[in-house]
Image 1 (cartoon, rainbow, N blue to C red):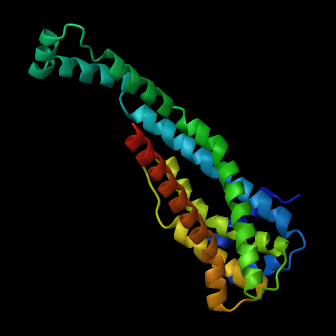
Image 2: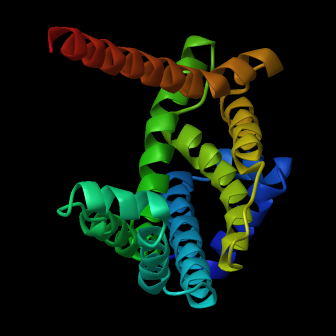
Image 3: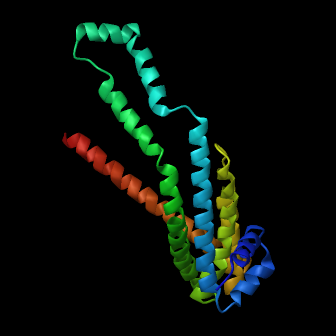
Length: 232
């Protein structure tokens, strides 16, 4: 069984795009298992970091329910709302602020939900991307096996270690997606012995197809909404 320190070394090597580690992973008979454990471990660690960051941010911010109560009280004292109540005594802001308060409460659970879902999302993303990238690489003349594809692209998940900065409240990270794509490019090029341009397009095909799919879904949803509006 791989040790945590070994998996973290793999992740850091992927983060720093160490070409020798990509080559070693290509020739590693346990690349698929190690890739699965690596992606899972990074997902768990990032999820925990996000949860801690959200928890500390919650401690550092005012209680949202008390804050909303103050806002509601101030709004109710404005001349506009006062005139509305004179015209309609049944007018009340309570239903609106009850919904806002319920939404604010649900946000407090986001950190805990993220800690659970992050490793699942990472694993699913790795597997789906791996399938598309492997088919693309093979169609471009690649020589690697499916296990080699997943083993090498798993190293690209090391870029997600940048997300550990979320343990600091309100901190954000950028560039992890681009760095991850560069890692996938290197992994596909090494695993399949592809030329630079072929590995480039094999690495980008997954995100392109996903973007097209989202565009089609968005256009379809918009068409349905427009049809419903015209029918109404």
